[in-house]
Image 1: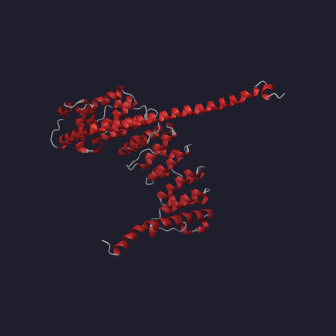
Image 2 (image 1 turned 30 degrees about the vertical axis):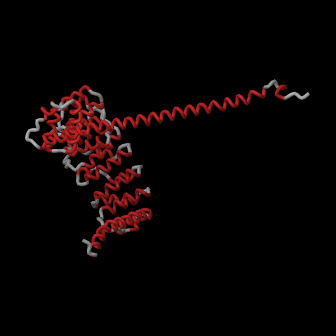
Image 3 (image 1 turned 135 degrees about the vertical axis):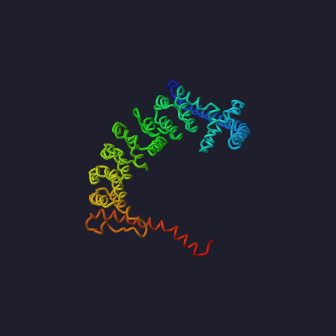
Length: 408
C-alpha cells in the first residue's frame, strides 16, 4: 500500500516551509515599521518647520510697524534736534520696544561713524548697555562675554583694563574681541595693552578676525609687538608663529631700529610653514640694511623644502638689487626641483618691469652659464610673461579702436 513520504518521515518535512515563511516575514515587518517611523519623523519635521516659519513670519509682521515707528523717532532725535533726550524716550517705552530699539541701535552703530556714532552712544547709555555689558563680562559665560564685548566695541566704550585682563583671555576669540574695543575707541594704550591681551599668558593661534586685530594693533605701533616676539617667539606654537610673521610682513609702519632678530632666526625654524612665513616677512624689509646684513640668501639652497626655497627666491626677486639678483642666479643654477626653478625664473623676471620695457632674455644673456634645466624654466616663465604683457594691453587697444570708430 502506498504511504506518503511525509507520513513515513513523521511529518518532518512540513515544518521547514513554515519556518522559512516566518523568517521571511520578520525582516519585512522590521523594514515596514522602520519606514513608518521614518515617514512619521519626516512629516513631524516638516510640520515643525512650517509652523516655526509661520510663527516667525507673524512675529516679523507684528514687529515691522513697531520697528518703523522706532526708526522714525530715532532718526528725528538724532538729526532733528540739538539735544536728543534719549533717557525720557527710553523710559517711556515698553520692554518689547526697548528690545527692538536695541536691535536698531546695533544696526546704526555699525553703519555710522564720527559725531553721529557719538550721539548714538548716548542712546546706548540710556538703555543701560554699558553697565549691563560690564556685568556680563564679570558674571556671564563665554557667549555672554562675547555679546558684551561686541556692544562695548560698537559704543566705543572701553572698560577698565583689569576687567579685560581678568575675564577676557581664556580664548583667542575673546582676546581679539577685547582688543577690538580699544581699537574702536582709539585708546592711547592700544599697542601696549593690545599686545598684552593678545599675546600674553600662553596665547594660542587666532582666527582670521584675531589676525586682523593683531595687524591693526601692530600698524598703530609695531614696537610692543616686535618686543614681545623677540622675547617669547620660541615659546609660541608654530601656528601662532606663522601668524605673527605674516602680520609682520604686511605692516607699513616704519619700524626704525626695532629688534627683528627673531625674524632672521625663524628662517631656520624646524617647522616648514614657519620658515616660509619668515622669508615672506623679510620681503617687506629689503630697505633695512642692518637686517639684510644678517641674511645669507645662498644658505636657503640647503633647505630640504622646495616650498621654503621658492619663498626665498620670491624674496630676492622682490628686492631686485644687484646683490639679491646675483644670489638668485647662483641659487637658480643649482636648484634641483623643476617647479622651484620656474619660481626662480619668474622672480628674476619680476624686477624687469612690464610690457615693452621688460626684457625676457636669459639673465645677463649668458645662456651657456646655466644648466639646460634652468633654461627650460626660463623659457616657460618668459612665455608666461609675454602673454601677461599682451593680456594687459588688450583693454587699451579696445578703447582706442572704439574712439576711432566715432562712438560717443
